Structure formats: C-alpha cells, structure tokens
Length: 223
Image 1: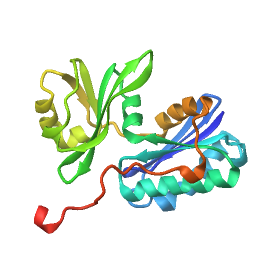
Image 2 (image 1 turned 120 degrees about the vertical axis):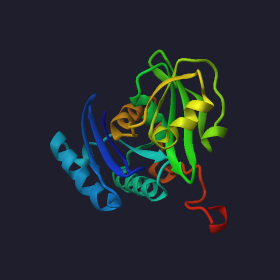
Image 3 (image 1 turned 90 degrees about the vertical axis):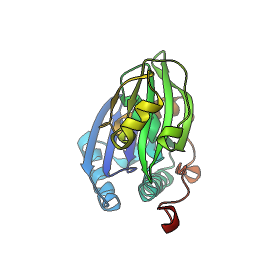
Image 4 (image 1 turned 30 degrees about the vertical axis):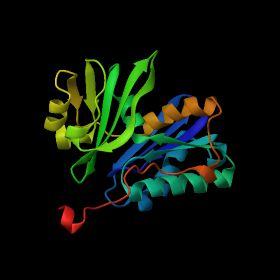
C-alpha cells in the first residue's frame, strides 16, 4: 500500500509517505503556517517517493487532540485529497502516535493542553501492538486518572509543562519520561497501515477531528 500521512496538531508540520513499508518523512517548524506549507510539502514528498497522487491507496491524518486550528487543517486536507481520489481515510490519535514512538511496554502519553491541563492516555504493548489502558482525556495533572502497576514510562509535552506534578501523581509507577517527544506522521503512517489492511479506513466525508476540549481559552473570571 502507498499511504500518505500528515500531522498539524502542534507547532510542527510533519509528513510521511509509506511505499510498501519504506517510509519517506518530512518535518518543519511551521508555527502558524501549516495551511501555507502543507500542500507544497505533500507535492515534494510525493515527488521524492516517485509516485503520483493518484497512486495513493489511503490517507492518514493526526486527528487529535491538539491545536483546534491544526486539527481542522489536517482533517480538511485529508478530506479534500481523499474525496478527489475516492480513497479511504484513517484518523490517527496524536496520543496513540506519541506512544507508538516511545520505547517501553507501559506508556503514559501526555500533551500540554494549555490552561494548566494535559491531554492524557495510557497504553500497554501486547505482542508489539499498543492496547489502550486509559482512553484519551483532558485533566489537571494532579487529577489525572490512576492506572495499574509499575514500570511505566512517560512521553510528550505534558511532561515538559507539568513533569513534577505528573511524577507526584504517579509516584513509584513512572520510571522515566521523554518530554521532548511529539506526535509525528511517521508513526501515524505505520498505525494507519494496519487499519487500512484490516479494511478499517473510512469514507473521507466521515473524517472528523478529536477535540476533547470544547474551548480554547480561559475566561477572565477563570484566570
């Protein structure tokens, strides 16, 4: 399968093109320029892979949680491309992709959600595949839900912003954390491959972001 994946859920814009299991990848610090950069980047990576857009079998995008604007951009581009070609789409959760990139058997994936909160999910690797222990949710770090056992590792920007609180919350359970790790289209392409092979791709018109939070800023009375 030839799969194009991209993620615009954070300040980086990442792309991956999987051609029969070989992955080409790109990443740039986009800031607020995702909508300006993503289509030229798609053209460049397809050219690098030596294939035409019409030769794609599926498209994957970072469905969230993350930046509201970024999630809408990725979803909209995925829908536009897939509808034009009549190919399926896979929305890949950013926390799932983050955990996929982290070595270890028990992984706590946390992204900084701003406003003092984190996006949070927990996974275990079983026979090399991630199984959800705690579904993605939005929490204050010290109120994050408990999970069983020890020998967990953490990853993501949530640990950069709230590492001390998270290590207190899960004292004795988390051995280490990589706060620099971020969601990337590379892992999204790999996860999407399994979904597409299993026939779990969806019609482009049904693709939607996973926001989790329903507001983007605190009211003045909440600050």
